[in-house]
Length: 100
Image (cartoon, rainbow, N blue to C red; front, side, top):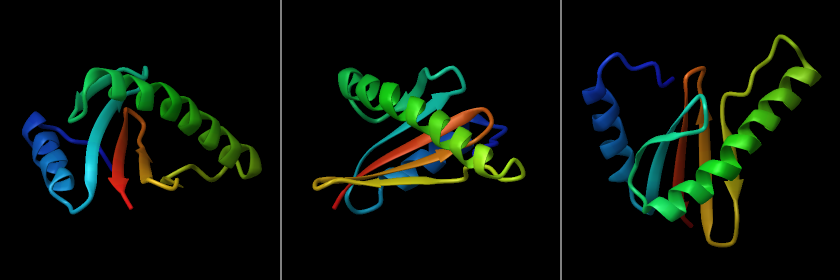
């Protein structure tokens, strides 16, 4: 999903996502869990990145434990205030936070 060859493509995609109604922020995280692009402040970015990177790893592991031929493609979390969408890829993790 996020296998972009050019930095411009990444920027364009993040801008397009960010322009959707209700989107609070986007974070692009590398495979090591380090945010490489974000539209949020540093403290908020680190908070979301730390927890959601770990959660995505655990969710992917759970899906593979249930069926080794399967893989996690998308993770959606709803709270009272936000919907958090996580799209994992081999090299990156895209996190989108949206108001409800």
